[in-house]
Image 1 (cartoon, helix red, strand yellow):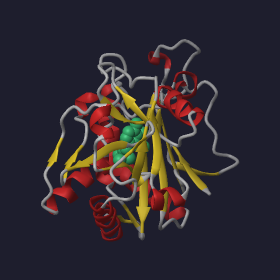
Image 2 (cartoon, helix red, strand yellow):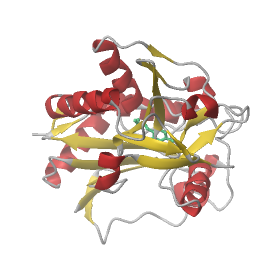
Image 3 (cartoon, helix red, strand yellow):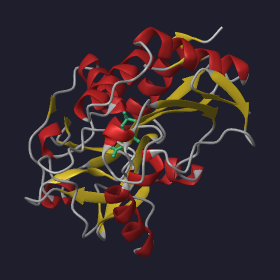
Length: 289
Ligand code: PMP
């Protein structure tokens, strides 16, 4: 595997960052998880746009233009002969002193890894996931805004550990008010009486690119989509539930906190949206060639 670091390609063995990088010392940095399908990078522009928004929010100046990053992502795919896979794009604050002040960091580092990912075992896509609500609440907007896709993922990791301890692969995270925010690495949707609902971004969720894609696909199918505050009650009484994320794609959920969702099987609308999403990934995206 060839890994891009600051304009050069390194073998897996030699792809290293300094122990003084504030990305490592403080989680000071940002990232994107991107997928390639069928020789095209899906939603590349949207991912790079979001990277720049995260950078702006943490006052990090990415040392490359939008176009140069886009080209570097495509070049990393080419160097690795990647046609289908998962791309991790990371920008760290860079090397600095041991104190947390980012002023000591001279130049951010850009890292691109083109590999693969499998978030959930295949049987869960066929049978649906069982998930639980966990005690760790999603970060407050006023503290560390969940819209920032930062390298500081401990909030999500703690929730993931709690899900694992409860025998589950994924967790529902509530915000401080008790409304549903999102899952540890995915946004959440429910279907009720033929309509689609997902928590508003203001509830404390990442501005998910798959979430947005699913909203557009559903609207094209003539479905009504709304974004009200949702409680656990709403999830328990949904007809269908599924999660969305670049890595996970669309994954059905059939049980939440011991309550069977709908009839406990994959719902018709979930199936339709999974098919729509698959079809879209096959034909759209930035060509790698
Ligand atoms: N929420 C969180 C916390 C995430 O980390 C992610 C990405 N893995 C998502 C939602 C889904 O976002 P996207 O569809 O843009 O991958």
